[in-house]
Image 1 (tube, rainbow, N blue to C red):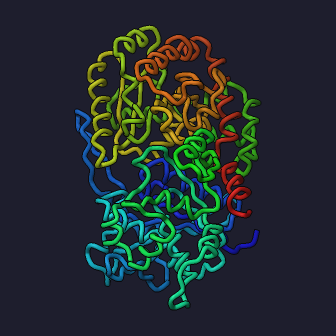
Image 2: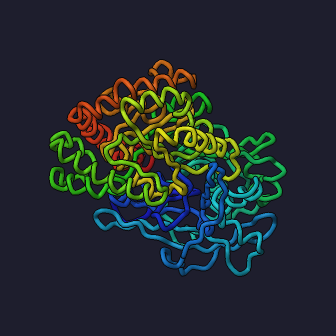
Image 3: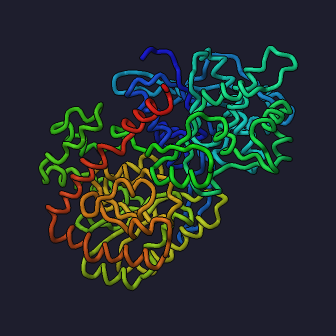
Length: 562
């Protein structure tokens, strides 16, 4: 491929590294992994996101599990450089809002560079209100969010033009937050003509240049803005465009806008593709299952083992299938080092007294009611009986959205159960789940637990990170796990495939306990070689496939260069 930038990737959040807090969770971390994979494969891409000067939030938990939040302070100049280009201007609420850009280069395995531009309105010439548009990720009310999405979508295209990226063939919207970029592309076609209105040819030309990935079947994940907010925030010219192309009826639905103006649309797992086709019929929706970036998520201890036995793993994720040739004791010793590292951290920050010889379960997701993190504690008596025969300990982590009262209640319930079990089972809930803590947990626990209410899990990537490190999953059959699950080989299922569209909390909890008590814990404590064999299969079968190298190959051939 030539060095011309032909793909523009837009995402409201992006997990570039631990020190740049411009992500909230899975969507942003996936975006960062996507850019890293594109750099490895030398895909001619440029990326656009927002600066988020105050990050998502810093989570504080008191002794009862009550979550409060505070802004994240970070040294922008230490990690980004200001782009030497004149600011671009977008109309917001009738005002000219100036936008500048910072840049961070992502360097691939072979040295190929992908620039990531972070848009910033906190600059001279803007009002205090306008300067705040790039402060808080997912903060504020509907007006604030639409202002942010105007900066990202319309301002992002304008910034790429100011930077002379004039040969972009595809604009990839990672979720609907960037959908307004379609309006700017339509407006570009009209410039130069005084009274010309949009034609079917204009709409089709823009549609042929856009790609849309939807990430959630949960209604709250699809941004919708009331028409009074839309007309108050957006330039009248943009509103007229939306009225012509989006079929607005009382609300502007950003997902429908992206669906209507994209030549290729995909869900993020096979099952999610099916659900999305039901939700958004008659739109044609494909699926490309998410992945994770192998070099980022494999622990340092296991990297040494891979370097010896699979020397091509860094630039060829498929070669991880050869993990079955690695001697069991080497996999186990590497895992033990990762577990030691995690438990040293846990014991230092939580004074938990966790023991490396005890079976350790990990659960770390955004705290939301449908993810059912507290389901593990459905029957405390059963947990006590299990622990008496085969000891276990549990590490939890995950932030609730600042405005999600239900998610915060889930955390409180976990703390209540933790208190009730404090004399029997060691349980910790770690605050401020981030990239570094994710790396520690997905490599250091013995089992990854996942309990979403089906069919609301679009994909999920935390279990993929665990699999790369040889950590098997115990998970509800939803999202990616329907594809990665081989019972007793890559992990274990909660429920049955034919029940993947239903949720029964009591039944699911009972199955969870049964798998722990009768299958997983006896295997771990009494048949260690067989347990390590499962670990090797996690790497060989799931690690070699559920990675962003495979994912990016699919985007290239299905969406980008077709």
